[in-house]
Length: 347
Ligand code: PEP
Ligand code: MN
Image (cartoon, rainbow, N blue to C red; front, side, top):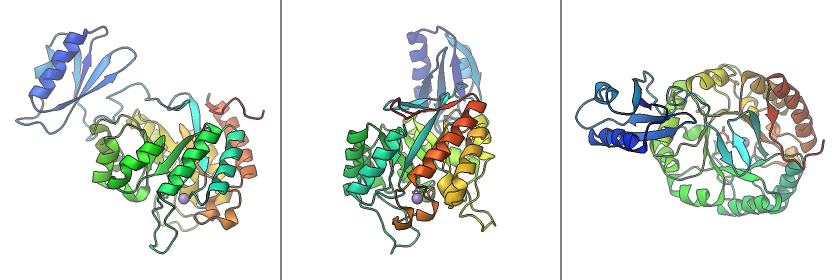
């Protein structure tokens, strides 16, 4: 359940509610909204289920709302306002649409700096690149590890872009978090609960990819694992799901975008590269994602897709990506939004 404080409730009244929540063995999670403070009451409690009557008559309390959904902090009830997380200078989840782009894997220093420079020239503010790769086969390229993190950090210094990379193991969370601006949790790890908890205990935002066979409720419960550890900055990512269809690598679940926006206050990002597996489909699916209400896109771009060590078939060349941005910008305008691009962008 959540305790909604009155507009202008005093700090002392808030503290008293927090103390009562703790005294019955639950954890209070504060959401300081623009108007009023909302306090989530989560946990399993020690003695008995939390009783709304314990809070209704307390000073400063406006209302107590039971949350029917099994996820609480991720729920729309917890925050009527959309959550906005600012990464370097990019506000993700607000009216602007965030752009994340780059190679599937960080392959070498020169290639990464080159593509980062090209993307920065197009005004893209967040660079993606895998350092630890979750490959289906143990014999496929596994990523350059920490060396790749150093290369990404160098690309950030050179371009001013923020960087995002995947973390695969709980024991690597601290190291990855020290280097990057956003941690990515891959589709194969969406239900790795120790990993979810570990990223929930570090301060950087987490892009949580939907498991390829996970329901929307399971995605929101995975987000809840992160939120319940104290990290409020979770980005939900629709990256395609498994269906009987074989024409594409995955099936982009466009429904998930407005469904997630309705059920949760968290930003929703779409990955059209993994959702389709085909470079020719990335632009139309990006446009569909923005039309459906996505808050951002994460797209694989490579200077020479035919030479990419992973996911070349679903990687766009920089020129095709620039064209994609023009098309997406027009759809964004139609839904009263704009792409977030740095002012250095060519007109
Ligand atoms: C990736 O982003 O390169 C990746 C491996 O994504 P996913 O976890 O969605 O397959
Ligand atoms: Mn990939």
